Image 1 (cartoon, one colour):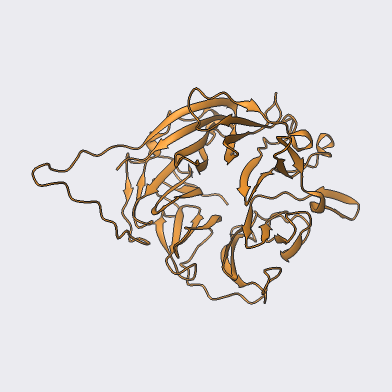
Image 2 (image 1 turned 180 degrees about the vertical axis):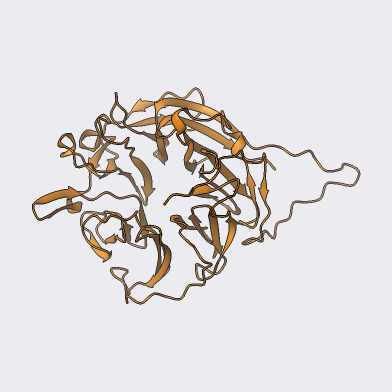
Length: 405
C-alpha cells in the first residue's frame, strides 16, 4: 500500500498526547519542598558498532549477544557473536551458518536473517529465493548449542505444486503453551507445530505461498488474533477461538472485536504486555491498544492517511521486563523517510517521540532510501539495544538506548 504524503521534518521532541490506553498508578514522586522540579533528561542513543551491511536483529543466548547482518553485492548474510554486555569495545566473531547462509545479493533484493529466542531455541528466519544459486538455501534454522552453529529446521516447509517446488519462508514464530505457531508462505497462512517445528499443520490458509503480505498473529489464552492486508489495500484484524489443544481453529466463525476503522492501514505487529491485559497493534500511520485482553481497541497514535506531517510505520514493540507501564516502539516515518522511535512511561496513554536521538537524524538518505529502526531488544541486564539501517537495507548501526525522564 502506498500513500502520497508530502515529506516534512518531524517536530522535535514531540509528545503524542492522545487519549490513551492504560495509565500508570505509580506517579513520579513530587520533589521535596524547596528543591523545585529537576531538569528533564533527554533520551540518548549511543553507537556501539556499525557495518556496511544492514542489521536485522539481536538475540541473547548463553551469555552472548548474536547480531544478524543482511547479504550485499559483495558478501553473503552473516550472524556475529560477542560476550555480554555489548559495549563499544566488544569484539564480534562470525557464527557458522552452514546450509543456513544466504549468498551474495546478485540481482535479487537484499535479504536479511531474523533471529529470535523462542523457548530455549534460537531461531533464524529468512526469505527463501527461487534462484538457481538459492536452491539449497534454508528458510528456517536453529542454533545448535553444542556446535555453536545453525542447522536447517525447514524440512516440512518444502512444498511442491504442479512440478514447482519451494521452501516456505517464515516472518515470525511464537510459542504458546507446548506449541509453536508461525506464518510460513505469507498471506493468510498460520501454521502450528507440536514437535518443535519438525512438522507443521495448517490452522488457516494453505501449505503454499500466498501473494498477500504475511499475517501478523498473537495468541491470547484460547484465542488467536490475526491481522494483515489481504486482499491488498484491505487491512483487517480478526480473532478466532482455538480448539482444546490449540491444534486448529474451533470454528471458522470470527469472534467479536470492537475496533475502530482501519481503512487501508496494513498491520505491522500484534503483541501483548506480559502480566497485564494490554494488547498493542501497530498499523501504518498508527498504534492501537486494548485494555481488555484484545477485545476492545482504540487508537493511541493515529495520523491522517494523507496530508499529515508524519506517518510512522510502527514495526517493533518492546515492553520492558518488570516495568509493564514502560515500552518502546520503532520503525520508520514514511512522510520524511527518517527513523521513528518513541516510548511511553504510562502504559501507552501518551508517547514521547525521540526519533531525533538517532545519528544523522534529518539527513536525507542517498537515493531516497528510508532510514529504519529494524529492531528493539532488551538484554539480560535490562539494557535496550536498537538496530537501525541508515540506507534502506544497508549501513547498519547497533546502538544503546538510554531513556530520559
